[in-house]
Image (cartoon, rainbow, N blue to C red):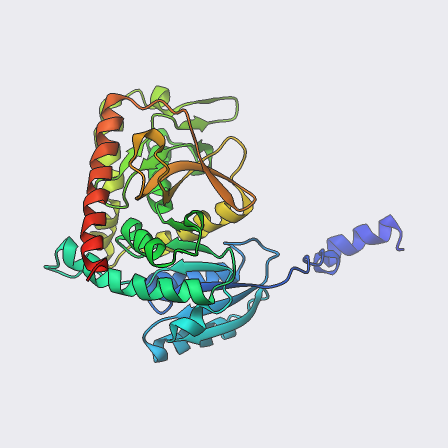
Length: 353
Protein backbone atom coordinates (compact mmCIF):
# COMPACT_ATOMS: atom_id res chain seq x y z
CA UNK A 1 0.00 0.00 0.00
CA UNK A 2 1.48 3.37 -1.00
CA UNK A 3 1.81 6.08 1.66
CA UNK A 4 -0.80 8.85 1.62
CA UNK A 5 1.80 11.43 0.62
CA UNK A 6 2.68 9.44 -2.49
CA UNK A 7 -1.00 8.91 -3.36
CA UNK A 8 -1.63 12.65 -3.04
CA UNK A 9 1.23 13.44 -5.42
CA UNK A 10 -0.03 10.87 -7.90
CA UNK A 11 -3.52 12.37 -7.67
CA UNK A 12 -2.20 15.84 -8.44
CA UNK A 13 0.13 14.78 -11.26
CA UNK A 14 -1.81 11.94 -12.91
CA UNK A 15 -5.41 11.88 -11.65
CA UNK A 16 -6.46 9.26 -14.18
CA UNK A 17 -4.19 6.70 -12.51
CA UNK A 18 -6.37 6.74 -9.40
CA UNK A 19 -9.72 6.85 -11.15
CA UNK A 20 -12.08 4.25 -9.73
CA UNK A 21 -12.80 1.33 -12.00
CA UNK A 22 -16.43 1.36 -13.16
CA UNK A 23 -18.72 -1.24 -11.61
CA UNK A 24 -18.76 -4.29 -13.79
CA UNK A 25 -22.44 -4.61 -14.60
CA UNK A 26 -23.79 -6.97 -17.21
CA UNK A 27 -24.70 -5.16 -20.46
CA UNK A 28 -28.39 -4.52 -21.11
CA UNK A 29 -30.01 -4.38 -24.52
CA UNK A 30 -31.65 -1.11 -25.57
CA UNK A 31 -33.75 -0.86 -28.72
CA UNK A 32 -34.19 2.39 -30.62
CA UNK A 33 -36.62 2.31 -33.54
CA UNK A 34 -36.41 5.03 -36.15
CA UNK A 35 -32.70 5.06 -35.35
CA UNK A 36 -31.70 6.64 -38.66
CA UNK A 37 -34.03 9.61 -38.16
CA UNK A 38 -33.15 12.86 -36.47
CA UNK A 39 -34.26 11.98 -32.95
CA UNK A 40 -32.79 8.49 -33.27
CA UNK A 41 -29.48 9.88 -34.49
CA UNK A 42 -29.43 12.26 -31.51
CA UNK A 43 -30.36 9.71 -28.86
CA UNK A 44 -28.13 6.73 -29.64
CA UNK A 45 -24.87 8.42 -28.54
CA UNK A 46 -26.65 9.73 -25.43
CA UNK A 47 -27.64 6.17 -24.50
CA UNK A 48 -24.15 4.89 -25.27
CA UNK A 49 -22.63 7.57 -23.02
CA UNK A 50 -24.75 6.55 -20.05
CA UNK A 51 -27.17 9.48 -20.07
CA UNK A 52 -30.16 7.15 -20.00
CA UNK A 53 -29.22 4.28 -17.71
CA UNK A 54 -26.27 5.66 -15.78
CA UNK A 55 -22.50 6.09 -16.26
CA UNK A 56 -21.68 2.56 -15.10
CA UNK A 57 -24.22 0.60 -17.19
CA UNK A 58 -22.85 -1.05 -20.35
CA UNK A 59 -25.30 -1.32 -23.23
CA UNK A 60 -25.84 -3.20 -26.45
CA UNK A 61 -27.73 -0.98 -28.85
CA UNK A 62 -30.36 -2.49 -31.12
CA UNK A 63 -31.33 -0.12 -33.93
CA UNK A 64 -34.30 -0.55 -36.25
CA UNK A 65 -35.05 1.51 -39.35
CA UNK A 66 -36.34 0.80 -42.86
CA UNK A 67 -33.31 2.46 -44.52
CA UNK A 68 -30.46 -0.05 -44.31
CA UNK A 69 -27.76 2.23 -45.75
CA UNK A 70 -28.52 5.14 -43.45
CA UNK A 71 -28.75 2.79 -40.48
CA UNK A 72 -25.36 1.32 -41.31
CA UNK A 73 -23.96 4.85 -41.40
CA UNK A 74 -25.18 5.41 -37.84
CA UNK A 75 -23.64 2.10 -36.80
CA UNK A 76 -20.30 3.13 -38.30
CA UNK A 77 -20.36 6.43 -36.43
CA UNK A 78 -21.04 4.66 -33.14
CA UNK A 79 -18.02 2.43 -33.75
CA UNK A 80 -15.93 5.49 -34.66
CA UNK A 81 -16.97 7.28 -31.45
CA UNK A 82 -15.17 4.60 -29.37
CA UNK A 83 -17.72 4.73 -26.55
CA UNK A 84 -16.56 2.64 -23.56
CA UNK A 85 -20.07 1.69 -22.39
CA UNK A 86 -21.12 0.47 -25.83
CA UNK A 87 -20.63 -3.29 -25.91
CA UNK A 88 -22.27 -4.02 -29.24
CA UNK A 89 -24.53 -2.74 -32.00
CA UNK A 90 -27.30 -4.56 -33.84
CA UNK A 91 -28.46 -2.56 -36.87
CA UNK A 92 -31.35 -4.16 -38.71
CA UNK A 93 -34.45 -3.63 -40.80
CA UNK A 94 -36.07 -6.75 -39.32
CA UNK A 95 -38.44 -6.25 -36.36
CA UNK A 96 -37.95 -9.72 -34.88
CA UNK A 97 -34.17 -9.29 -34.82
CA UNK A 98 -34.47 -5.76 -33.46
CA UNK A 99 -36.68 -6.76 -30.51
CA UNK A 100 -34.77 -9.95 -29.69
CA UNK A 101 -34.02 -10.00 -25.96
CA UNK A 102 -34.22 -6.24 -25.44
CA UNK A 103 -34.61 -4.93 -21.89
CA UNK A 104 -35.61 -1.40 -22.87
CA UNK A 105 -37.30 -0.10 -26.00
CA UNK A 106 -37.53 3.51 -27.18
CA UNK A 107 -40.00 3.56 -30.06
CA UNK A 108 -39.29 6.64 -32.15
CA UNK A 109 -40.16 5.22 -35.56
CA UNK A 110 -43.60 6.03 -36.90
CA UNK A 111 -45.45 7.55 -39.81
CA UNK A 112 -44.87 11.33 -39.75
CA UNK A 113 -47.68 13.78 -40.25
CA UNK A 114 -47.48 15.31 -43.71
CA UNK A 115 -49.02 18.43 -45.12
CA UNK A 116 -52.74 17.99 -45.71
CA UNK A 117 -52.93 14.79 -43.65
CA UNK A 118 -55.90 14.54 -41.30
CA UNK A 119 -55.42 13.21 -37.76
CA UNK A 120 -57.50 10.14 -38.64
CA UNK A 121 -55.17 9.33 -41.54
CA UNK A 122 -52.13 9.68 -39.29
CA UNK A 123 -53.66 7.34 -36.72
CA UNK A 124 -54.51 4.79 -39.42
CA UNK A 125 -50.91 4.71 -40.67
CA UNK A 126 -49.49 4.32 -37.17
CA UNK A 127 -51.97 1.66 -36.08
CA UNK A 128 -50.48 -0.61 -38.73
CA UNK A 129 -46.92 0.13 -37.59
CA UNK A 130 -47.58 -0.32 -33.87
CA UNK A 131 -49.72 -3.41 -34.39
CA UNK A 132 -46.73 -5.05 -36.04
CA UNK A 133 -44.26 -3.83 -33.41
CA UNK A 134 -46.55 -5.02 -30.62
CA UNK A 135 -46.30 -8.53 -31.99
CA UNK A 136 -42.50 -8.33 -32.13
CA UNK A 137 -42.37 -6.88 -28.61
CA UNK A 138 -44.52 -9.64 -27.17
CA UNK A 139 -42.76 -12.47 -28.96
CA UNK A 140 -39.11 -11.43 -28.79
CA UNK A 141 -38.36 -8.87 -26.07
CA UNK A 142 -37.01 -9.83 -22.65
CA UNK A 143 -39.51 -10.36 -19.83
CA UNK A 144 -40.39 -7.08 -18.08
CA UNK A 145 -39.09 -5.00 -20.99
CA UNK A 146 -39.75 -1.28 -20.34
CA UNK A 147 -41.16 0.60 -23.33
CA UNK A 148 -41.26 4.31 -24.14
CA UNK A 149 -43.30 5.45 -27.15
CA UNK A 150 -42.04 8.71 -28.67
CA UNK A 151 -43.58 8.69 -32.16
CA UNK A 152 -46.74 10.75 -32.52
CA UNK A 153 -49.57 10.40 -31.78
CA UNK A 154 -47.60 9.00 -28.83
CA UNK A 155 -50.45 8.40 -26.37
CA UNK A 156 -52.57 6.53 -28.90
CA UNK A 157 -49.61 4.64 -30.37
CA UNK A 158 -48.93 3.42 -26.82
CA UNK A 159 -52.55 2.30 -26.54
CA UNK A 160 -52.31 0.34 -29.81
CA UNK A 161 -49.11 -1.28 -28.57
CA UNK A 162 -50.85 -2.32 -25.35
CA UNK A 163 -53.90 -3.72 -27.16
CA UNK A 164 -51.81 -5.91 -29.47
CA UNK A 165 -49.28 -7.04 -26.84
CA UNK A 166 -51.63 -8.29 -24.08
CA UNK A 167 -48.89 -10.34 -22.46
CA UNK A 168 -46.93 -7.15 -21.77
CA UNK A 169 -47.98 -5.43 -18.54
CA UNK A 170 -49.65 -2.07 -19.21
CA UNK A 171 -47.36 -0.59 -16.53
CA UNK A 172 -44.39 -1.40 -18.74
CA UNK A 173 -45.65 0.77 -21.61
CA UNK A 174 -45.38 4.56 -21.36
CA UNK A 175 -45.33 7.52 -23.72
CA UNK A 176 -43.26 10.68 -23.81
CA UNK A 177 -44.58 13.87 -22.25
CA UNK A 178 -41.28 14.63 -20.53
CA UNK A 179 -40.37 16.99 -23.37
CA UNK A 180 -43.44 19.08 -22.52
CA UNK A 181 -42.55 18.84 -18.81
CA UNK A 182 -39.01 20.04 -19.50
CA UNK A 183 -40.34 22.86 -21.64
CA UNK A 184 -42.58 23.94 -18.75
CA UNK A 185 -39.62 23.97 -16.35
CA UNK A 186 -37.60 25.99 -18.86
CA UNK A 187 -40.30 28.64 -19.27
CA UNK A 188 -40.71 29.02 -15.51
CA UNK A 189 -36.94 29.29 -15.02
CA UNK A 190 -36.67 31.99 -17.69
CA UNK A 191 -39.60 33.91 -16.22
CA UNK A 192 -38.07 33.91 -12.73
CA UNK A 193 -34.44 34.27 -13.77
CA UNK A 194 -33.38 31.11 -11.91
CA UNK A 195 -31.56 27.98 -13.01
CA UNK A 196 -33.84 25.31 -14.47
CA UNK A 197 -32.42 22.80 -11.99
CA UNK A 198 -33.94 24.91 -9.22
CA UNK A 199 -37.49 24.51 -10.55
CA UNK A 200 -39.47 21.35 -9.87
CA UNK A 201 -42.91 19.79 -9.76
CA UNK A 202 -44.61 21.33 -12.73
CA UNK A 203 -47.19 18.98 -14.25
CA UNK A 204 -48.20 18.28 -17.83
CA UNK A 205 -51.65 16.71 -17.90
CA UNK A 206 -53.18 14.87 -20.84
CA UNK A 207 -52.21 14.28 -24.43
CA UNK A 208 -48.92 15.07 -26.13
CA UNK A 209 -50.70 17.52 -28.39
CA UNK A 210 -51.92 21.09 -28.41
CA UNK A 211 -54.63 20.13 -25.86
CA UNK A 212 -52.07 19.23 -23.19
CA UNK A 213 -52.31 21.28 -19.99
CA UNK A 214 -48.99 22.54 -18.58
CA UNK A 215 -49.77 23.29 -14.93
CA UNK A 216 -47.46 25.39 -12.74
CA UNK A 217 -49.82 25.60 -9.78
CA UNK A 218 -47.90 22.97 -7.78
CA UNK A 219 -44.40 23.91 -8.95
CA UNK A 220 -41.75 25.42 -6.71
CA UNK A 221 -38.51 27.30 -7.33
CA UNK A 222 -35.58 27.66 -4.97
CA UNK A 223 -32.66 29.96 -4.42
CA UNK A 224 -29.89 29.76 -1.82
CA UNK A 225 -32.05 30.40 1.23
CA UNK A 226 -35.59 29.56 0.16
CA UNK A 227 -37.97 27.44 -1.88
CA UNK A 228 -41.32 28.99 -2.72
CA UNK A 229 -44.36 28.24 -4.87
CA UNK A 230 -43.97 29.41 -8.46
CA UNK A 231 -47.44 30.93 -8.33
CA UNK A 232 -46.31 33.18 -5.47
CA UNK A 233 -43.03 34.12 -7.17
CA UNK A 234 -44.55 34.87 -10.57
CA UNK A 235 -47.51 36.70 -9.04
CA UNK A 236 -49.18 36.89 -12.44
CA UNK A 237 -52.14 34.55 -12.79
CA UNK A 238 -52.80 35.73 -16.35
CA UNK A 239 -49.30 34.70 -17.45
CA UNK A 240 -49.62 31.30 -15.73
CA UNK A 241 -52.99 30.54 -17.34
CA UNK A 242 -52.40 32.00 -20.78
CA UNK A 243 -48.91 32.82 -22.07
CA UNK A 244 -47.17 30.02 -20.14
CA UNK A 245 -49.71 27.40 -21.22
CA UNK A 246 -49.77 28.43 -24.88
CA UNK A 247 -45.97 28.75 -25.11
CA UNK A 248 -45.46 25.19 -23.86
CA UNK A 249 -48.29 23.82 -26.01
CA UNK A 250 -46.92 25.47 -29.16
CA UNK A 251 -43.19 25.12 -28.47
CA UNK A 252 -42.71 22.33 -31.01
CA UNK A 253 -44.27 24.42 -33.77
CA UNK A 254 -42.08 27.38 -32.75
CA UNK A 255 -38.94 25.24 -33.04
CA UNK A 256 -39.98 24.01 -36.51
CA UNK A 257 -40.62 27.59 -37.62
CA UNK A 258 -37.20 28.69 -36.34
CA UNK A 259 -34.98 25.85 -37.59
CA UNK A 260 -37.19 24.31 -40.31
CA UNK A 261 -36.92 20.96 -38.55
CA UNK A 262 -38.59 19.37 -35.56
CA UNK A 263 -37.30 19.23 -31.99
CA UNK A 264 -34.73 16.45 -32.20
CA UNK A 265 -32.11 17.26 -29.59
CA UNK A 266 -34.60 18.21 -26.86
CA UNK A 267 -36.83 15.20 -27.65
CA UNK A 268 -33.87 12.83 -27.42
CA UNK A 269 -32.75 14.42 -24.16
CA UNK A 270 -36.28 14.18 -22.73
CA UNK A 271 -36.52 10.50 -23.68
CA UNK A 272 -33.28 9.85 -21.79
CA UNK A 273 -34.65 11.78 -18.79
CA UNK A 274 -37.88 9.76 -18.89
CA UNK A 275 -36.15 6.38 -18.93
CA UNK A 276 -33.45 7.35 -16.43
CA UNK A 277 -35.97 8.51 -13.84
CA UNK A 278 -38.21 5.50 -14.47
CA UNK A 279 -35.37 3.00 -14.03
CA UNK A 280 -33.11 4.76 -11.51
CA UNK A 281 -35.79 6.69 -9.60
CA UNK A 282 -36.95 10.27 -9.19
CA UNK A 283 -35.26 12.50 -6.58
CA UNK A 284 -37.01 12.61 -3.23
CA UNK A 285 -39.76 15.22 -3.17
CA UNK A 286 -39.78 15.58 -6.94
CA UNK A 287 -42.22 14.29 -9.52
CA UNK A 288 -42.09 14.24 -13.31
CA UNK A 289 -44.70 13.95 -16.06
CA UNK A 290 -45.15 10.61 -17.83
CA UNK A 291 -47.79 9.30 -20.19
CA UNK A 292 -49.13 6.18 -18.47
CA UNK A 293 -52.19 3.95 -18.62
CA UNK A 294 -54.92 5.69 -16.66
CA UNK A 295 -56.32 4.02 -13.56
CA UNK A 296 -59.00 6.68 -13.11
CA UNK A 297 -56.91 9.02 -10.95
CA UNK A 298 -58.12 12.64 -10.91
CA UNK A 299 -61.30 11.57 -12.69
CA UNK A 300 -59.42 10.78 -15.91
CA UNK A 301 -61.19 7.97 -17.80
CA UNK A 302 -59.58 4.55 -17.61
CA UNK A 303 -58.35 2.91 -20.79
CA UNK A 304 -56.31 5.77 -22.25
CA UNK A 305 -52.67 6.76 -21.95
CA UNK A 306 -52.68 10.12 -20.18
CA UNK A 307 -49.91 12.30 -18.79
CA UNK A 308 -49.86 12.42 -14.99
CA UNK A 309 -47.39 13.54 -12.34
CA UNK A 310 -45.49 10.45 -11.21
CA UNK A 311 -42.71 9.41 -8.90
CA UNK A 312 -40.51 6.42 -9.69
CA UNK A 313 -38.67 3.92 -7.52
CA UNK A 314 -36.97 0.61 -8.34
CA UNK A 315 -38.22 0.62 -11.92
CA UNK A 316 -41.87 1.28 -11.07
CA UNK A 317 -43.90 4.48 -11.46
CA UNK A 318 -46.69 5.71 -9.20
CA UNK A 319 -49.17 8.51 -9.91
CA UNK A 320 -48.89 11.31 -7.38
CA UNK A 321 -52.19 11.52 -5.52
CA UNK A 322 -53.97 14.31 -3.68
CA UNK A 323 -53.02 17.36 -5.74
CA UNK A 324 -55.65 20.09 -5.70
CA UNK A 325 -57.26 20.65 -9.11
CA UNK A 326 -59.27 23.84 -9.53
CA UNK A 327 -62.09 24.39 -12.02
CA UNK A 328 -59.76 25.97 -14.61
CA UNK A 329 -57.37 23.02 -14.48
CA UNK A 330 -60.23 20.52 -14.52
CA UNK A 331 -61.66 22.02 -17.72
CA UNK A 332 -58.27 21.80 -19.43
CA UNK A 333 -57.69 18.24 -18.25
CA UNK A 334 -61.11 17.14 -19.50
CA UNK A 335 -60.50 18.74 -22.90
CA UNK A 336 -57.36 16.66 -23.37
CA UNK A 337 -59.07 13.50 -22.11
CA UNK A 338 -61.88 14.05 -24.61
CA UNK A 339 -59.34 14.32 -27.44
CA UNK A 340 -57.68 11.08 -26.34
CA UNK A 341 -61.06 9.37 -26.23
CA UNK A 342 -61.67 10.49 -29.82
CA UNK A 343 -58.26 9.19 -30.87
CA UNK A 344 -58.99 5.87 -29.16
CA UNK A 345 -62.25 5.55 -31.11
CA UNK A 346 -60.45 6.29 -34.37
CA UNK A 347 -57.71 3.78 -33.58
CA UNK A 348 -60.25 1.05 -32.72
CA UNK A 349 -61.90 1.59 -36.11
CA UNK A 350 -58.65 0.56 -37.79
CA UNK A 351 -57.84 -2.10 -35.20
CA UNK A 352 -61.04 -3.97 -36.07
CA UNK A 353 -60.48 -3.81 -39.85
